[in-house]
Amino acid sequence: MADRLWIIGLNPFDLRGNSSLQEIDLHTLIKQPDTKSPPLLIRIGQLHAFIAQGKTLFVFCVLTEERKTVEFAESIVALEVSNKYCLILLETGRLLKYDSNEDRTVTLDFLGVEDKGQQSDELDEIITHLSCGEHVAVACSSKNVVYNIPNKTVTFPRHVRVLKIASGFEHSLLLTRNGDVYSWGSGLRGQLGNGEISTSQDQPKLIDALAGVKIVDIAAAGWHSAAVSAFGDLYTWGWNNQGQLGLAEAKFHGRVVSQPQLITFADEQDISVTRVHCGIGHTIVEVKEAGETDESILVAGCDLQTRFQYDRATVVPSFEGFRKLQPPISQKEGERSLEVGTGPYQVYFLQRNDAV
Image (cartoon, rainbow, N blue to C red):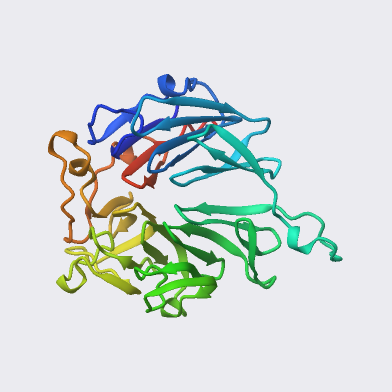
């Protein structure tokens, strides 16, 4: 059985203007066979969507019927996108930058450049994490080095291990394995979470408001950020122009919130958040409710289905806090789990073929 993919919001694979929940025929779209095949990587930018499978990258334009297929010598193991390009990490460790507008690929070779000539007992440095936004591109390496590509930004001590990085338009977040969160970049809309409205913070700095709280997941997009604690609490901060922070109180409507805020969920006193995902104007959380065995999905921010419905498009923000988002299928229908992801203006659901 082939993988199954559904999208809500701006659909880069269907230009007919239907932003309601749609299932994408992957067999037709990328000729995915019904039999065993390499796992899919899906990333969606503002203008282009990318699907990587094995050594092949499929490129789709959001606004036109343009379709491209790019072949590489090795398999793609990581993929991150911005408005202008995508970063492609191959299984050999080689990092490429693909410009979808010019259909051009260049190699990014920056690891250890600033350390050449120095003695080291560690010869091989490889990229372990990638993230990019409209004006930032970040990589972390096996030597605990953080790069604002291509420049070396900071080297963390050996005992600090990076778990995840995430980026918005102009800022980045970094989560360590012991639960600390660092931020850097532009903070003009409070997205750094340091309580200030600042033009730039060049190096990763610990978010003091989250100190003492073990964080297990982070997300960022646009000008806002989010974090999930080990206790299942959700924190959000940044620009709340579309209600994407999930803060229902009137004092937060349309405002910049420069410190992490603990989210309360209306009518649901016993909710535990497990994962968080951010789009430009929306935030998605996967949650477990008391007494329920299956996870639920909640969304805050703009209504993706009406915002991109061409015959009745509206950009009215939603400040009601988090509300339920119905998944395309019930998890009780089978053992294959449903993965949730976000693009700038969409939510997607991917059910993988367990035979892969």
